[in-house]
Length: 127
Image (cartoon, rainbow, N blue to C red; front, side, top):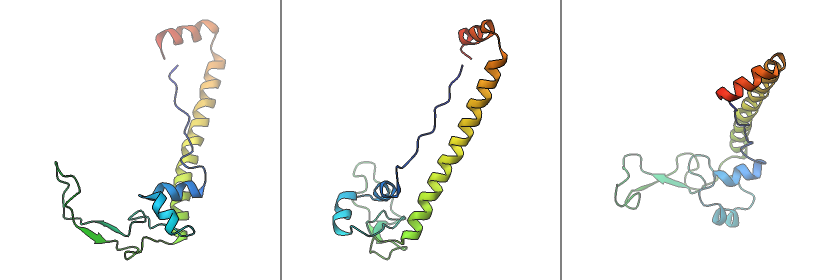
């Protein structure tokens, strides 16, 4: 039988999500232990200029930096925005988990109706 992989929870808790957003988590946590990072810039306070392309040799080394329009260069964002983004990610996981449980239930019901020979034939076919 073709197996579908069980969806994995993306983040253990809100703190794990907060640390995942950050582009430089260790340095940011030391400077701002109780602050929430900006979702757009990842807590840096800046982003690359949208008009500059990545150089194939140098990468982003010579790209210009511009101040983040959301946090205005502070790197801090509202807790409410981080919490909303976290809930959105967990919501996606819950939907995927629900679909997986329904699919597994349908597989079990279908297999219960088959004989042992039919199940063996399906396994041999790789279905």
